[in-house]
Amino acid sequence: MKQFAFIILAAVLFTGTGCYSFKGISIDYSEVKTYFVEQFDITALNAQPAISVRLTEDLKEKIRTESRLTLSDVDPDVVFEGTVVRYEVTSEAPQPGEVTDINRLTIITAIQYINNVNEEKSWERKRNFSFFFDFPSSQTLTQVEDEAIQAISDQMMEDIFNEAFTDW
Image (cartoon, rainbow, N blue to C red; front, top):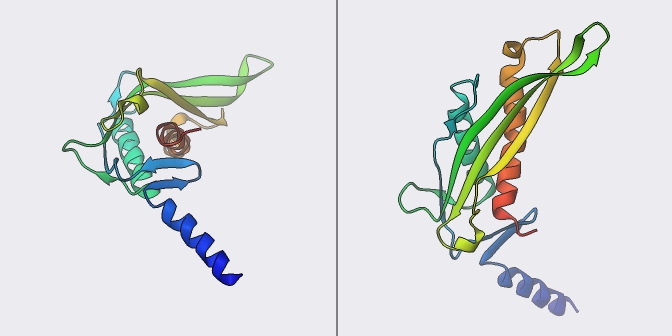
């Protein structure tokens, strides 16, 4: 019985070696080995100039730590191009007397995913990814901006990564 269980376990392990699957992520490492993330552009008004570098590096780091892909700017197998299209603070949760209790920073990016190995997996058009961060109106954006950008970026990178590398 132990031999049978060992054989089944070995068969399962050896049949999945060409394709990586973790948390629903599916990357065929026999074909896709490298990636590149172009420096994000900014078209949003009032966006912090450093946001493009921050988002670019965050996406590179996400792919580096959650896959076995290697960063390469020479003929990469997959490429990400991004643009920050909205960077805006809005008032939420209005209170009596024309005062708001909460402000919201919203960042929207438009991302193009190009799969040079399997063009069917490329996105025909840029896809928008967005997230927001709420903060009390008693604080200014400057006071919470770093924390807000980190929280927004973490969620957007998760969404971009999952959209590109899952087959759900």
